[in-house]
Amino acid sequence: MADDIFTVDYLNNYLRMVEDTESPRIFHIWSAVFAVSCALGRRCWFPRWPNPVWPNQFVLFVGTPGTRKTTASGLGKHLLKSSTSVRFAPEDTGFHRQGYVVALQGNASSSEQEFLAAAENGTRDGTIASLMDLAGVTNVPDEYMNSQEITAYSDPADKHHMVLIASEFSRIVGQSNMAMMDFLGGRYDGEDYDYQTKTGHIKLPKTLFNMLACTTPVSIANALPPQAGGQGFLSRIILVYGAKKYKMVPRPEAPPEEYESMIKDTLANIHTNMSGAFSETDQAKAFTDDLYRHYQIEITDSRFAYYAERRDTHLIKLAMALCAARDSMEINLSDFEQAHQILRATEIGMPDALGEFGMNPLAQLKQEVLEQLRVTMTAHTIEELLTMFHRDARSIEIQEVVNDLIRMKQVTMQTSTRGQRLITANYTKQSTEDAMMRTLKEMMDK
Image 1 (cartoon, rainbow, N blue to C red):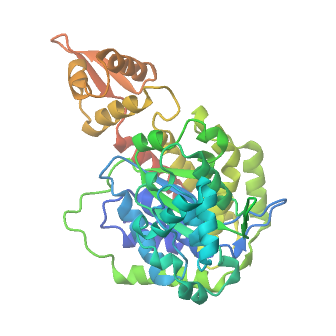
Image 2 (cartoon, one colour; image 1 turned 90 degrees about the vertical axis):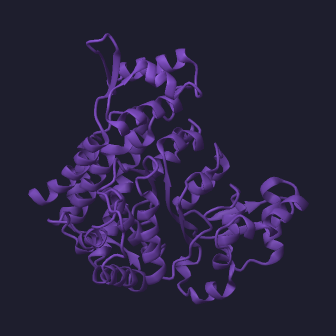
Image 3 (cartoon, one colour; image 1 turned 135 degrees about the horizontal axis):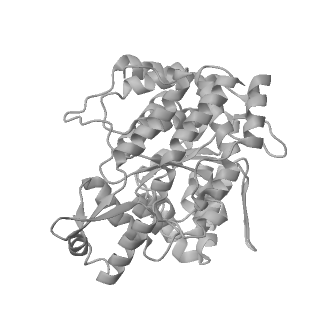
């Protein structure tokens, strides 16, 4: 990378480390931020009445297949595993929250585990069996249930803090699973987990999750019910849209050791030495107060109304990570300014990340048609689109989808000299990615 984008060396070194990878830069930026948030755990917070703001993040990498989402998320996981002792939650629990509860307990007694399994589904025998088969549905269950690892993890504040990184978001939430979304929402907020029935009681104090997962715009519509926006779960998530590959790398190689070593040293230092409350300078406080009163989010999509209300919290979480990455716990003006710019850049792609979620019954088809036009970057005739998607919908529905896209000015229809109706996407993935990076570079151009 020719020029530094950030004033934080950690982020610039991270981007140098991943220069020869295909993942979009915006994925790596958020992977770097997420790693710091995980290293901070539950030991650190930003004081705000009545509830503190924890540094954890819920991040979704969204893009079409092949945009190297898991490359970026997997590198972040590797760096955390090799430089910190954070605990990783199982990626797959069969869509049941009791798997995560058992992982949070770490060395729970067998009777407690049985109780949780039975309480989850209301029947004792069947769910005990499913819990005992947990090793069959989690990727690396021994890592999370080994009592020796819990003993080695010495900081009491992080006892019930876990990191959840999944290559597929649907492995976490399943399909329209509101119970799982409620559970994850409580872990985002740092709440105690308190489960009471007539026969037993399980209480896990001070729980906290960091979550990073990968998905596609089409999969979001399948995984989340329309009410997920109003329920509050969606507003807790940073949707990071990877518009296109950064560049083509036929033979990827391991990252340069010098940069990887610097990143690991930073994460290890944060995880080992930082604890307590963040503070802020007077300039930083004045900047955020002004943003809170006057800044209007640049997303005009009504589906992000709840996200806009929670943006101030996302800003603080991001500023904490940037502050910690420069080895400080006093947030300054630059931390908040860069956090604001990173959010602005990310928000450019959020409507595309969400796709047609929550819009109408033909949302999935509409998203698939739009993605096809953007990926190919060529004009298609109506007849070609009917042929491509004839197995997914009736001809009249495909025509309705195209008409909706034209009305929304996402595509344009023109008539060729031979009388054919040609459909073209109004902008490509290139323009979205470029707009994100231009917004980030505004910081260094000031």
